[in-house]
Length: 266
Image (cartoon, helix red, strand yellow):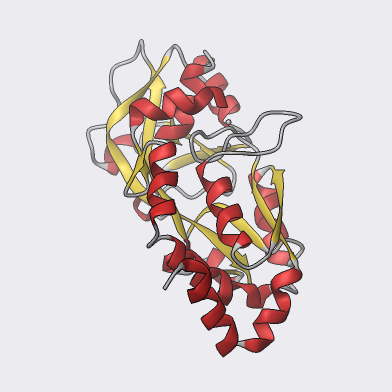
């Protein structure tokens, strides 16, 4: 049974949801360049693996998709209010689950979080979170970096809006460390913004990233047919080809290929 046939069977079982297939799905995303997953440049439509995957799955339901790039706190707020239907590149936290509907079939990618610091300083991280307790650690507002770090309330975390601010504050020695995903770091490195900054091994955490649906949106019921379509698409040859196009294996981008796609866009 092909992808479309599987989706049509699902919609025949849930006829009230079939009526929603002419809707526009509004998907919010962060406004930072994170190739190959989400490629964002000013005055250009968003692209990348997540964007193409979501569009392809939505097309199986005759759904048009409107992507809206926002600062991450505003993107999350739109999910809380229901003004957006879904959010891309969202990891799962206990707080977010109050207003975002996560389904495992809607996994988009996996990323890893790392500490970063200036290259001219000795490593401040030995693989154990308590080792960084004496230091000022920069984080981006409302970002989730994985439960081990997110729940470590004893750490001195200082919040900023953008990854550029994290790097700037490290360079000005206003921060000792900052935490970042590897794909975000590589995008900054390619742009020349992180030449004096290094990642510290090992990774702090691995994070699963989803397209999640707002529980408060008027289109909240779209989560069921979309999840069915996503499940079916992931079993197809087209999905394998899409991963190959972006050099992604098991929803994890190869490090060398992330930098290659950086010229294209989060």
